[in-house]
Image (cartoon, rainbow, N blue to C red; front, side):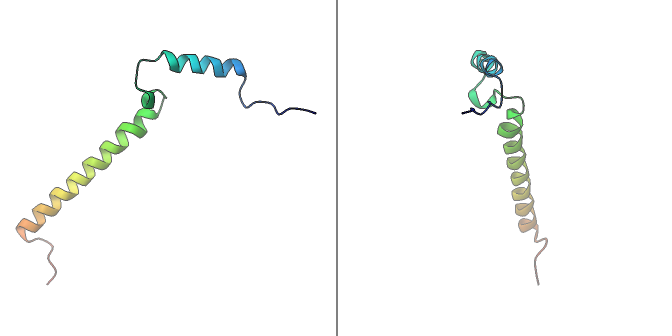
Length: 68
């Protein structure tokens, strides 16, 4: 009976595990593109929502965009 071959060689997996264990950063920032998904995207969403809230408050205080 044949066994299925692994996706990656065991040596490569061990090498990657050792690399990630030696890093001093937080666990969610260890990958190459993890900073984009865990920092940049939430900051962009927060910034755009604050901008839209500020614009809405400005429009309400000046009476802009009211339906008649």
